[in-house]
Length: 417
Image (tube, rainbow, N blue to C red):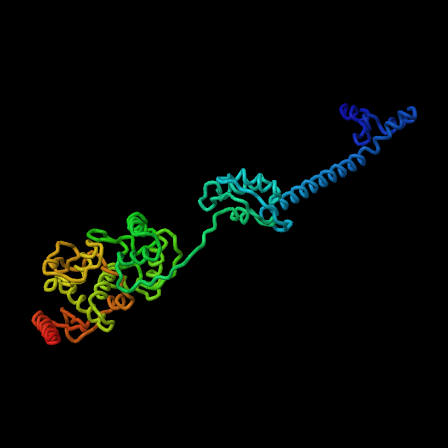
């Protein structure tokens, strides 16, 4: 009970919300009435502090926004001016004359163009040239001289105005079916498309397999040219003055196109032979048969021999020896001697078994198609021979083959009498 009385007699603590500066509101009001007018004005200002702070914050925000807008407008204006100088969107159209010294640098050129009024920002022109590697690029070889240029040209057009003009000429070349690599190179050279040495170097150093999958895994053992058989015979339009790979890749592109469209790639996957082996067969067909009507029959003879290696291990085709002798001589060889038939060379199909190391020419579409699809005959032919008119004679046995040869010689002898 004693404790409760003490609590009740304890002075009541004023509410903090009712205090102003540690005084009650009544005490604060009494003290304010006793102040001088000037002192009272000073204390009265506290009633407006919150309002003034709000106004001040708004003014500062407006100033900040205006500053940002002003800077943005200035930057945008500058950026547009720079873009206009580079791309010449709305530049004033007039002509000026400039003198460009020999071996001029981009720094010197920028100052010349700036002084002539062709550009507004020489430093920007130099920066643009640096991005495009103008000083090191062979495409920008500035030629000294006096030039009349338009001030509404963009940077690229301006630079090209001082570059030596190269006139692109074209040439149309037809590569006959059955052409060899050597003959194709000779046609390129005759038409002003590089020279033989450059083509030969290109074929040994350029990585064609990286661009054409069908050239990746070819075994070059005993082979003269990687691209033999793959340079598709057709008529082409070329630009002159290009590198050898430009011309060779055009023919390889056409080869790939024909094989895709004709589904030869898919057919090769289903065949027991590779694309290179089928092209080799096609190239022999191209050289051995004189008439298109005989392509599938000659193909049949080659396939029949390849399927019976125990009895017919060697193809015995003159065309493969002619190819080897032509590559060795560097020119086309036409006549064979008995000694040539004993040539120690992987392309000698009288001595070597099976197919030669690779194609012996660029075969035609018909030869390729017949290599994939030989003729189906009632008899199995293993021999063929042709007369001087290109008429083909087929035989199933060596005896019949020798008779065909004898009949041809007899007919030719009678014509000569």
